[in-house]
Image 1: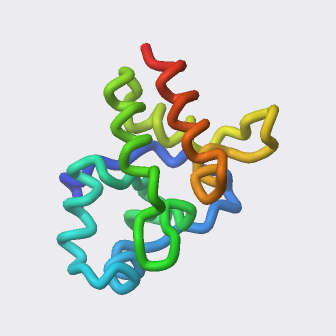
Image 2: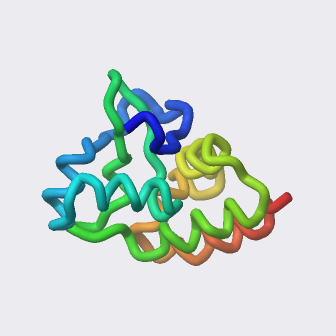
Length: 121
């Protein structure tokens, strides 16, 4: 797991995270497939308590939440690093009162993609 690119753990302390094995069970994938999703920039993860930790907000049931992969791509294409992208996903948007990772689960998902595009570079 040392070669898996992880973000700095800037997540709020109360953020629910899932282990690689929990995600693999949820998605019906092998652990290595889950680690490949992180390496391939389809998921972001941090190291917490010595383990790879993936925010639970990145999922709707057994699947990655609908707009997350595209939003990550927009952030990276816009010049964000992994650390910056993870931090942005969990920063409260003052006008909405929630963070982008939460907003992806509702009608504000496309607005989060638009905001990410606007913040590029």
